[in-house]
Length: 561
Image 1 (tube, rainbow, N blue to C red):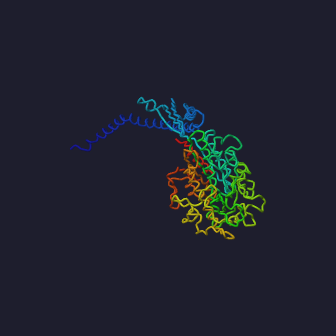
Image 2 (tube, rainbow, N blue to C red; image 1 turned 45 degrees about the vertical axis):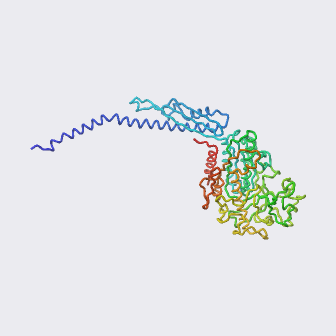
């Protein structure tokens, strides 16, 4: 009988033959597939290089969109420099063909399109010798008007050299002759650091000054040099500084309106701080709202005279919030209204803020004294209890002559919480407080022989609320209705940088000042969707601080692709 097993044996040889035939027929397919993968990798590498070159060309030309430079030529130069035909690493690509489109206007753009021919290797087997690779990038640039507000309080001493470097670098990213920049710095009070002429800077929207295009002119008083002159010392008069920044922006806005009939620039304030508000500007004898007690010995308890005799100054708190164990210092001068010193002197001498009101005797706008400037008669003289203290901690003799905290600051901004779904007073430890007059912290006791330390808490709340209310006025351009002849409200964006390396800032306050979309503190929303949303960037060390300035500059200029 025939064995079935032996008869099936030849079929194995037939299967081996079938596999051989299959491999023979499939070899071109697998070679083509491998070739396609290799050639695709080559094209991917070429496209990566081309994309990087196109991005660099767009951004490089974009930085010069507001100058007389030919953006098309600049883009071509960047492209040729970054994509090197015939050089190793570019896979023998050839036929680089750019197409560059530049648009002008308030928002300027440069769009760079480029194609290059990449030679193929394995695909030549099917008569495909080369492939065309393309890339595109667009950079956007806006003409800017920026008021830079810098904290140079005493806690900034160690950080100041780094801050100066980064702030100068920030300034240099803008285009001198086209962008408009200005500078306000603050310790206990704010001072206009650039432009320096006239001095003191007029505190009206139609005064001379304001951000200009000569901020990097090379003069010893240009903005870059003024930043280099900064010295640290004193308190943190953030509200006063923001109020000055708003005035300066309005000056530039009205200047353009008068010259051009319109204002097409974007406007911004960039606030840098390493701390929290610790000083509030005041107008103590304001007509209609005086807070000077009867019997204080002041010849001008109410400012009803012509010329005016306003008691301007700032009150500063020391220590840390909620200031419950601190005392508010006496009244010190506001740097912005001091004609006895120059802007350059203030840049290098924050201690000038502590020049006491007796030196105001010769100032027409601040004639605190009747006729004498001697130390014994200060308008509110020592013998009747008023002491023009320079702000020494624990010296509250000035404050004992007040019947209450003023309800507004020097500029008329409220010193009580503005609501808007968010209670700023919650930041300093009392979620129920809605007013600086809150009695749960001891209240304001002007009749005490030695005012309780809780009085400093009330001044602290006033400083916080001043910052919040000034920022709200800036973002809504609250003074628009008062600018005679103005037909275009300003759209102002506020950007904030908080440096936490010196003990911390209040991120809630800085997010609210910048109107961050989605921000919320203690359960309260701090975003106003009717106003422009800015940006808050936090930095804990110098590397992060450098990156923060770069992030803000990019956001303002919109150098993106």
